Image (cartoon, rainbow, N blue to C red; front, side, top):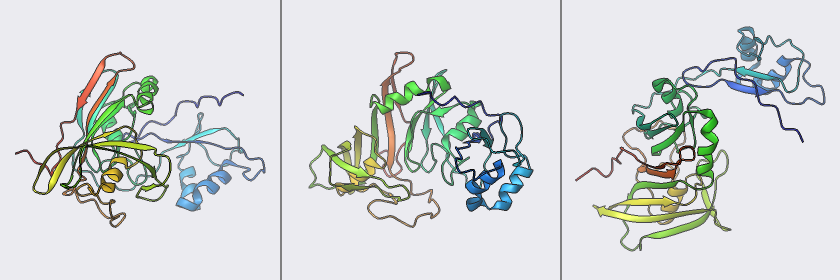
Length: 311
């Protein structure tokens, strides 16, 4: 079977560090879409309205590899189109993205709490990748993995697109040693360290993940580093990378993380972020053998959790 041809390069530049959206027109065996406009209305009118689709066409907002699209062109399955989405106003996250390391291959960033790694949902320009592209002048920068928006700490970004797969494979094959730090209640009855294994399920559109019976698909080692005033500082060593894994496992031990808005109880979804109450979870260490240079690499976050100030 022949593979799909590689898409042509985008004729549109980035805007505010965000790539244009790329569409590939699907097959139309029933002939529902005589023109490009017919398909775009089917695809987008429900979300933004037919008038907005027509306005974007009239303004030359949809482009092919050759020129702007008017919408009256005959529908051609397999054709690529690009456009820039409309950015809703975003409240700036009032914390900088630190750079722990930068070379010709990698940028290791210290992502602050509340900042998404990549554009998604209502967070588009206020994301780590968009900010770093703008601030460092690296429009081709791409993350090799993601960190939850509410979690702070180290994220690995790749400078050269052709090398991204090699670094992504490190994370896929669990060849990266990751160490997290967390602040949560201290329970003297709990014997630590402990390794937690469970089956975690995360449904699309449901904010909280859950544990359920079945073959474990997640594993975390939990260690107590120190304690004071009813709180503990914990070292968390995930062997797998399920969504919300560390938060779920700490909660299952009766140790929900300080300022966690989801576990054990989901707070009001969509409520404004409270900058004074960051989730007390930090991706503190990344360690691996560089797949491009062969060098041993170890990076440590310069951030600290606010609920555990230095003595």
